[in-house]
Length: 342
Image 1 (spheres, rainbow, N blue to C red):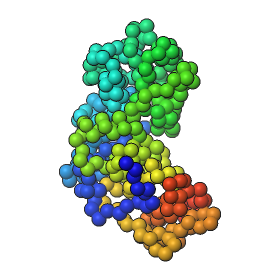
Image 2 (image 1 turned 90 degrees about the vertical axis):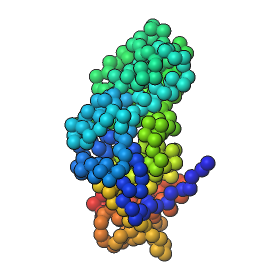
Image 3 (image 1 turned 60 degrees about the horizontal axis):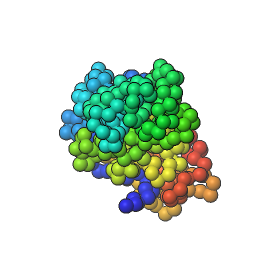
Image 4 (image 1 turned 30 degrees about the horizontal axis):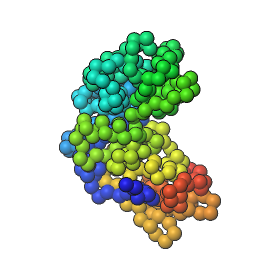
């Protein structure tokens, strides 16, 4: 069933933490960056939780176990149980378990998170293509993963074994900047073998399925910083989403988003969960939010008015997305974004 094309961010009179029963929160770039809590994250999540919202942490990073993630969040001041954490390792382990015999051996190219998730599904992780595996699974293994692991995967895949990947994010944020992610490592094996993996992580359905099964969410809100994983995952799952601007997405990327990358709501950070969202209204040939009016001109997006920068960005989204329809807005947004300080 097709979805209606989103042409503007939605408004909400209710605080989002009241309108939705569960927040499905990405971690890197949303809750923390480089291991440290992002500004306003700890207090915002505490307030949402106290108000009755269930918080679940959904990550494509397959390296760490749910226990390790929960411990880290708790140390940051966000009390978390392992059952509140859903990883792409868990999603891909379920995907594999649905296709191989119980107790089967699986060659692991990645970290402890994958091994724990496989054991949880009754599968046996092994380290060599010569250990009689029936499948290969690849997940982020951290910066110290030996190059030889990619060769091990290639040997097994060349023998005809099915290949699974936890996710294909090309990059991952770190304390020093943006680093290669599991998608870059998957590309190495793809080049060597010519094969294509089955992928479980965001934005694909297996990850959404895993999240809903584990949380029991009835009115979920996906909260993320990446258009191509978090927001597209919400689109594929037909649920609402909140984009926060604390991670990798900037204003220009948001304005150029195709339909599957357009969030329901946009806010600066996790404080946006605790408030309503301003409405964007159509006025003549433009769109108004707060004190700003945005229009799609012949060559560029035009912005008039004054007020909160985020209101201007929301108005620009409406102008850009309406002009693009089911495509991508190619109008110049530089001058309008500069006026907003974005």
